[in-house]
Length: 198
Length: 321
Image 1 (cartoon, each protein chain N blue to C red):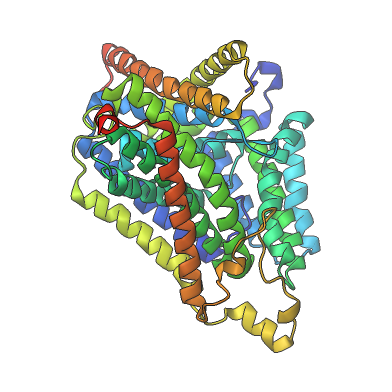
Image 2: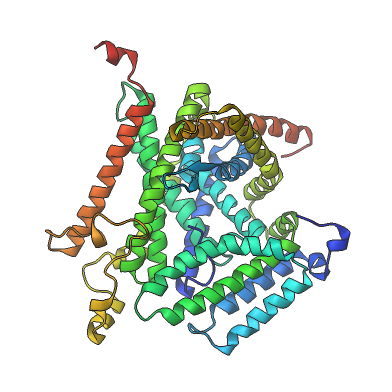
């Protein structure tokens, strides 16, 4: 996530706990709107748009995230759409859901996960969970890169396009990834102990 | 299966959040009691592992691709309590780092994918693990494949129940659609889970030893607690709809007269062999639905068994005989 100084806006500098609470309140308000489209929908939509512009969320980044969520929104919304008499409900749920996702995109754009972890710490989240979340955040890029590297190596050595073989190879990669994670966890534990972790 | 915000109503959101909090609480208690300090970093790494594994795309028939969900796999590798915690953390990171899945729907997502899927899958795995003592590897692959399928389908059924309880869409639409789609997704999940376990068992069998990755002893209380929670969730979100009387919307539809025009079933892009999960020659809806569900489960059971036979050859002793 980009956090260079020239990208930092007023929203980036606000405390994470406050932003999280505000997002919860706005999402709660949006979901409580009537189950048919009214002018009231402009209120959260306008607010989220203002926040989007204030946080300077890049259009392509936001759109990509929105499209990923759209798959689920339309998939679930389709249930309402094909049920008799639920057309208005589909439209309102579709708009509400999109507003909420857009708000979450703004929140994730202007709040680094480490700050959210800090807010969780202030909220007295259990220690085991905080450690798990922190380690997960730290090793996410490492393991993702490792799995990409292994997949690239597999592709450069697999000349067959047989589906069975590819499934076999891919599951072996995932198994390897797990074994490496277990070994890495052992080393991390020793490193954590060396730095006084209790 | 990540539910976005605004599809669940207030009572369902509160109920699912409460159930998720209770489940994570029980898992935390168990993890603190049974995991040694040196195993704590493994939880974080396992979370990152699930994330990275989800990024690997498997080719599936039809030209598209799918990815592993990983809940049942984590449960088999680390034990149910640790898996509940790991998958919950994965869902929290997905929500707060990638805006994937709703903030208020986080409870429902944790409950479906982190608790129902993990606990049901793990239970099925433990029950089926020792089916053929002569060939433990084959029975492990079979149990993992079947558990992966059951976990995926059950999570989708509770998700359908939550959507129906929220009045977003009627049960007779959400249940067949969600169950049908996830019965297919579950096949891929089952095969992948079985093959991954087999690969681990072949190169590092000691990792599947319960004393290394999974806690040596699961306290009975936490198993009972998590099991009760899953039953409670099924009773709250699924049982009310699985009764023979028409639901509210169907009653209204019959009164107004548009029931005949309503689509009788939805099966996504795949035609259902048994429409509405009913068999034509069985009268009672409840019995018919139960029979159709049992048929699907038996088919998955048989498929998992054949898959295990295909990937794990018979042991030498059996070949000689």
